[in-house]
Length: 145
Image 1 (spheres, rainbow, N blue to C red):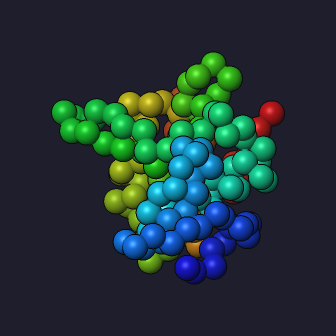
Image 2 (image 1 turned 90 degrees about the vertical axis):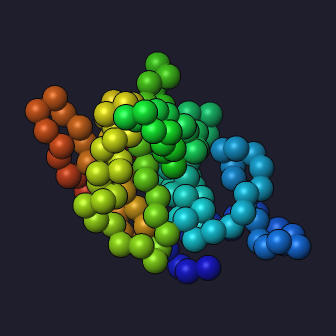
């Protein structure tokens, strides 16, 4: 896989007859290794190893309803009260981050009401803080406190 603009880590991989799998440290199981999953697992590692968010506060592939349609957020970090704190939308490193990605995460935000949003393809990371007045682009996420 491609080297990403995230801290290097050694994920647990295994090969099966239908392809390569990567260990998801949040779901505690092996999942099919796709370019998007490669980005997701690296970003989860960044949240846990660098920003010190507890694995117990992180969920992946969270389903929700938006405009009568079923949607699925890639990564949600919850605060100490069980409320969404960070929503992360992961794309393959081959897909540029753009307006459509921001619209996609905005639909999740309208349901979940997190304080921070992240758009990443593993190479480029865009961070946003939600205030009552506006969406503010920031340079990094706050560490877990």
